[in-house]
Length: 190
Image 1 (tube, helix red, strand yellow):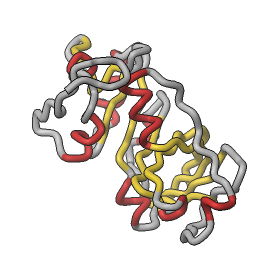
Image 2 (tube, helix red, strand yellow):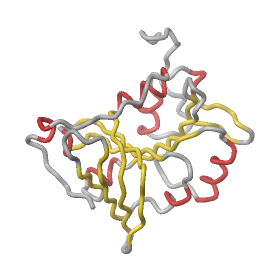
Image 3 (cartoon, helix red, strand yellow):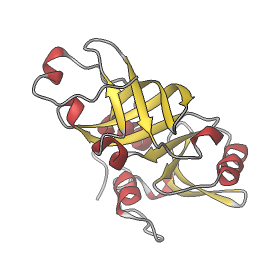
């Protein structure tokens, strides 16, 4: 099957022991954009503009994070935070019409502090935004006593993020409208 936008050959992801979360993010990406060798590492995804996207579902040590950040010239992290958001451990404070949101993550991933490159969190379908599948880009973070992380960030839809990975289209923020918050549950974030 070919991509209707660019004609690239599309196949299911190259499984290689990956779980469904990684496979869903790779679905629809051209073969030459996946599993790219860099020195002794293999980048998960290479965007058309040359940015490596590391898809991280499970634990990754601080040393492994540092190694990837040294090897890849341009990269971002996409961490799975679906479970934390769904269970209310990662909450958002969304203000209609404002691009920045506040977040609070109780019991966050322990190794996020090792990330010096941009960090995106896959929140999955968010009850706080009409069940849109959202991605949070952390723009500012603060460790809090008691194993909590607070900060600010920008939201993107999963479709926009995937289109950026596959086609290099602009990452445009999702800005909540008043209607988006109607009939949704809210979890306050600091």
